[in-house]
Length: 283
Image (cartoon, rainbow, N blue to C red; front, side, top):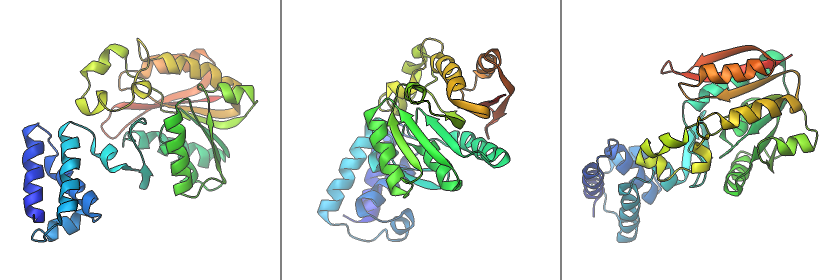
């Protein structure tokens, strides 16, 4: 079969199940099967593809037809201009979270922070991006999930940052507290979706992304409550706590931080003008 025939098969298959990005997805998956980029696919439509590769492409299309996210299929996602390895069992890094990293990098520069903690690290996207862009930092990434720790380790090694990033298993910050670790920054994108909302999410998310990385308890605030208290035990005086939040959680998370003694607590919006990041200082 030729590239154009395979693309048409992909377009038709994905369009039938109402995948809006059917054209882009089909091109990306054919690129994955052929190990070429999207431009090659678009400019070589008359090229004949050998049967083995065509079969692999059809297999990938069938996975996407079942609403598996493309990034899980190709095991890759871009975040902060960096390529990350991902797989099922960790949350797919999202553009909204780049706001959290950008705010953390600003705090690091302004305050000359060195020791950073990324808790609920998932794929390691936040911690790796911080270490990648700020060469004077040392980062510890914590997660309770073995898959998350494995994926984070792979991304640390992929970007040759193992001399500055440690990856440890921990229930939130319990390991840091036990080992009397101290940080200038604690940054987290914790699970924050209300339990009864998860069933209403898109199939791509609710059927494939890990429940443990999505569910923030009955009111979505379970992990914020714990982390605000735990952070006070591991942050240096003058240190900063930064959270990603849901679009409707600004008031609650800011109150949790203020009530626990954090100062200069503010909220930053994302590019869609939704409340996205809350940060405050321990003074």
